[in-house]
Amino acid sequence: MVALTVSVLVLALVAWLNISELIVLPAERQNQATDPTPWFSGSVVFVLLTTTILISTTYLLRALAHSLTETQNALAEKDRANRLLRVLSNVN
Image 1 (spheres, rainbow, N blue to C red):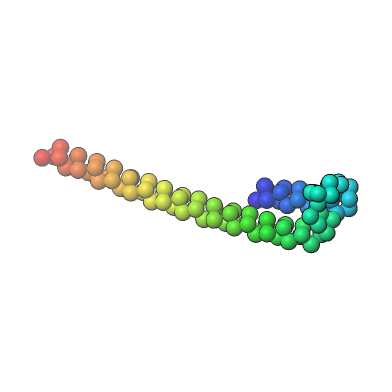
Image 2: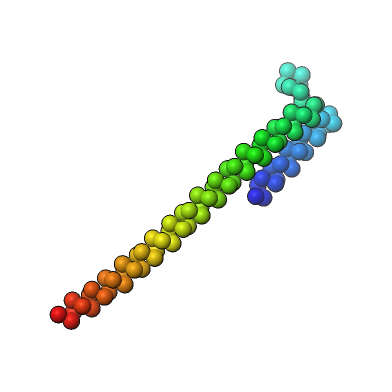
């Protein structure tokens, strides 16, 4: 989340510097660089895509943590059953 905030702040800073013409790009590289509308729409798309990536990554990490917990529980149950079987086999 910090990376998203820093990225948006840097994007806003570059947009402001370009719109206020403190940074001047060569004419052949400028595509409406001083118009705030493309900067705004680009920022919205950037934030939406980044948020989507963050949400999906968070979901996958939670699912992985849940799966690992279930696996650890199953392994503990298997170890308990294994110890019980060893005790029973030593009785016979």
